[in-house]
Image 1 (cartoon, rainbow, N blue to C red):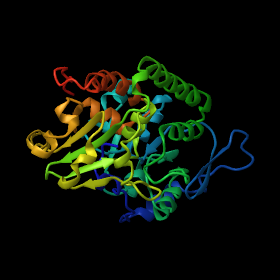
Image 2 (cartoon, rainbow, N blue to C red):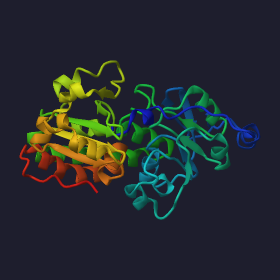
Image 3 (cartoon, rainbow, N blue to C red):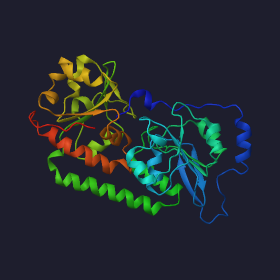
Image 4 (tube, helix red, strand yellow):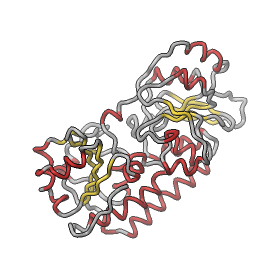
Length: 342
């Protein structure tokens, strides 16, 4: 995923002055629903399960990309956790188009502001795409029914299909959620059929930071996007990802050969990142760069944003943005221009 390591470890528990009074005012019940509610449904997650009844109208999202899923189901959150991009209401263009002019209140990314969340009086708090702690969950559950990240995936690592499923149940629209999932999966299937040449060939996501450091990724929305198109990781690079989370790996200049692939997507973070990539003699000697196989993605470009989010709303735009560039890079002819990501 085109997010740097610090973005994967952002969320931490935080206290707040006056929070107890706010919680007392909005937590008169346990927020979980009861067996007497005929429309109650239960959602399993990392910290147990949460019961929700009715149709939540006031939704706060605390994961990195949860807002997109709520909006896709017709509910614009009253509060959205900022991730990156400084977009109005923390909504990127593909989400703003669906939000109908409604701009949510922005929650800080560095830490949970429980007071701010309580003041928003949510009916439900959604965090399937996040990584909250048990302490966070306990605090949030005193404010409103809270859906944490699923237990079967690493924090921040749930696939978009799972996030869509959980959000659909939480908002009482599971059928619509399943329909949206099928539509996007059908688009991927159609793209694979249109480009059988992708099958089994290698592709990799890397990032360059302003200080000149390089990272490679095996997990996350952008690597998953490449896999869903039929690509595989280069075998030598695959071998460096160990452990169940297959965390992003720093690539030393001595091992930049690990970035070689039939298609190389490069996220550029910081004003100097693109210049560093373009002038690094080791990078420029890689087959991927000599043969014009690199797709450059500035941090705030639509291409980088859509792939970083990898959400039910951004993926259709990602297919439109990424596939023509991947096709141009894949041919291995440096004379074929790869359109710049705007």
